[in-house]
Length: 468
Image 1 (cartoon, rainbow, N blue to C red):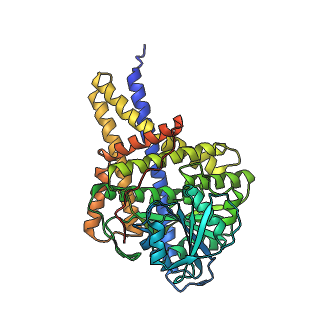
Image 2 (cartoon, rainbow, N blue to C red):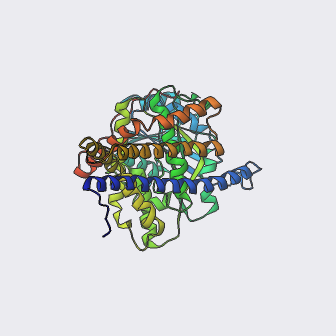
Image 3 (tube, helix red, strand yellow):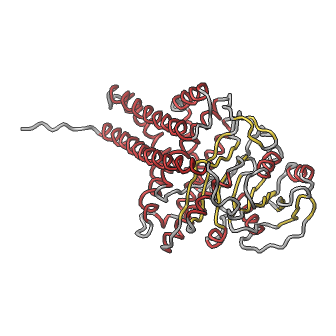
């Protein structure tokens, strides 16, 4: 008789968690591998763009929309960064969404604003517009002062006021590099079916910024913004870059995204009653185009950079991550018809399921895996060897993914110069796996539970030091 080796229930459950961790990391490595080739092609293309431009000053006019709520510390620097952009024709629309601080007063004083009688079409419903101002010094700058309605409502007000066929949504606390618009608009020039394009968001903490100009790229001294640099590299360089080649990008950051205005209007504008309005819009555009079986492209361009201030305290960071996770769940649920839809292609069969099983549910599985495996070990249901192997495998794969993102950064854009900064980022990518990533998973789990049980939505307050 053959002896059949059997597993107890605890071992089977532990193996199931381990299989999930292996699967998610293998998929991440697939995206990383895809990003490597996509970035290689892009870098070659970028080198050609350093030659004299064949269509300089023929780019499509762009309306930049910057919602602002209690941004008195950063709004001036942000607007100056927009005014110095290297782009032939664009307008800046700052939407003051019922700020309770001195945002409007600061704007009026700094940019010599005067009331402006403006007629606009109501493509999107918004809260009441109280007044419109224009700058006496900068003819392409207008300010909309409206009653508070949230970020989505402010963006919709900007869409109604915009004059040009493309609009760029940015955060009012962000800084764009001078060539960012020229680069993020490229997909629209190359492919007339392009309806959206996103750029890279990087952490501005520690950098030297004067009057909206990025003078020197430096690393922050605090640990929290430092590990967020690694997170942003991982999310943009191999997350979105990996999906871009498959036309499966589901997220274009609300901090820096370029959209075809009429496509957004046709899709119903931004949804007011969602926290993740940026992702929800992109997923809805996918759903609309896929189900209508119309050709389209949603692109990601890694080179145009938007610098933003990252949270430096745990309370603010927690609020942000809870909000992001809840917004992710809301976006996926409201567009669930995309899941495994026969007309959905790559989006329905790859990127959408990936977001559900490896992004939305990942914090629940991750923390459950740690807890259950620890309990099984402490109660003697699994061996010490298995427990140690489980922990080492999970932590080492997470570290390897972060380090590979740094590798992509070094061979492509090398934004952070100097050996010292590279070494600091390397050790940060290792250290984040020992406590920070688990804490982040806990916050994301809270966001998942808030969405599932329908708790009242809260944006929280971003504590800012200012980038002036």
